[in-house]
Length: 162
Image 1 (cartoon, rainbow, N blue to C red):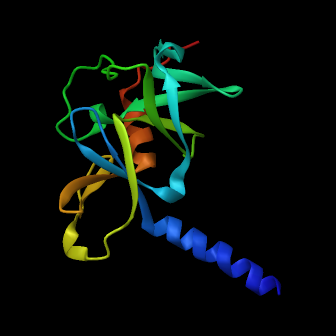
Image 2 (cartoon, rainbow, N blue to C red; image 1 turned 90 degrees about the vertical axis):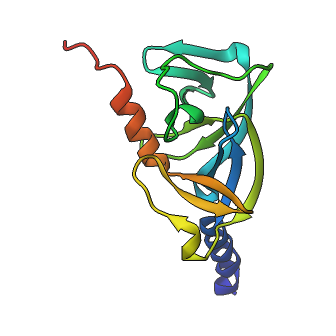
């Protein structure tokens, strides 16, 4: 009976590994993250966002959630380091797990959950925070949360020495 109980949980975890959450970044670029890394989907009121030395952040429970502007970390993104939060009362954010704790990916719109394409011809590996896939006949940037975090830390100003 215990083996039967474990089977649905394992099937669900395997499905999450092969499922992608699709979103649209500011500027119209299509992005995806593995569903297994997604903790929550949030719409933060814009007035709760705070700008700090390390970038944008929002109070999230008892912690501070760092926010990454997805459009600014994509290949070919504008070099303007200023925040480009879209207009509107709320900021759509995908809260993901990372080795450094939760991180928020700010997007323009959260779209859908789809299965990752199994056809190797639809994939083109590349450097940077992700790789490109063709999903539903559209080029989609599959984001690597750890690479995004590393890129964000590399771009952050160095802390002053004590």
